[in-house]
Length: 511
Image 1 (spheres, rainbow, N blue to C red):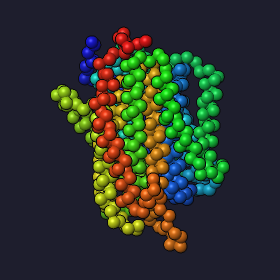
Image 2: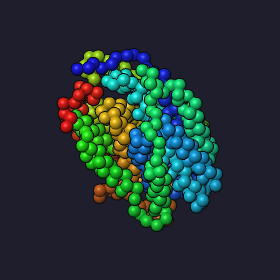
Image 3: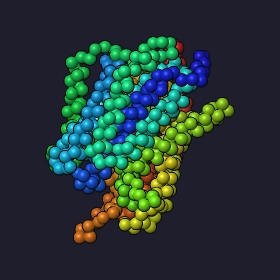
């Protein structure tokens, strides 16, 4: 049996990808930090409508990696996919700048849809491919991959930390333009230095094109752009309440396992590992559905019912979104050390147990904020320390789940399906983000309420949500139950992962 490769340092390509991803995430999270506030304050949308649009946008952002992963594996290779994605995202952020520059109205909404479409498609090319390249820098069974993804994850969070502080400190249009500039920096650096740094430890270039893009695939790309633009505009065009994007995302979540697992070339070990990825992806939906309230309901809560005064200065509500990435940057090295110490003593939890712990911590974060808002009136405000505490606890949970999940997919997915499986993993994030928007729409009325109109409270499975305490209890129950079930299943999932298997050796299970 081959032994895991043991080295201490990391290739320079990891830090190059770190830099590229950092600026791309600056762009994405800078725009996300102000997006729901832009819709409610400039476009004058209702909270529920803005939440649903937010969920549709962030959901589709994580759905399109399926398309990008497929085209990368078949034709483009990682490098060309990343460049195409970067160009589209820069264009999309610029269109958001133009939308905000109009000052509102139908024209602003139409330009916003175009901008969102470009960002969504661009992210589909960029996101799965840059994550996959991290794994390609290392030889098989190299234990450094776990720590590499944690370092890479710090790059994501460094960009996510600065972006709300920059984009949230200025007018909406300049905030979107700053996000655009972040994407341009990411793209230019990648184009200039990819050949120098993106090589394996054996000196081979990684992520090269497989073959030329054919007409059929070009039509698939153009058709996908048209479909996403249509879905984003569906409710407005047809004056319909049907959530077509929900059907599309949740449908893809059900169909993809069937398509991938029906591949007859998969060995028994490969099939078991892919089943583990899909089961864990299901639980990830509940984690991110609760966690991603940061850009939706928790931003509205920060804006309206959190005391943001600091020595006479009112902190922008978007600044709270910098707490999570700052906490991750500070705590990621600590978690890496803890996992390393536990590994050396043969006590390190399995990936499923780490992810169950992440779910438990996100539930605990909502317990904290539920205590703060119990008995809170509509016009009352809570200390910002409660919200800060929630974000810090959630950050620890994120470190237990997200980098571990990325690393797990990189290790378990068959090499020939690596980008597609990474795209499928992001599909769970798509379902979770759309779910997050649906859950955010359940937030009860707060702030200024028209006394001449009856207050309409949202409901979920027959229960009416009349206050913030009941709203946050939804997340406590949902993530708490999910964590318990995953803990129970974790030992069985660990056996299914069969981490002693070497896919480069003859497979006794192969048909």
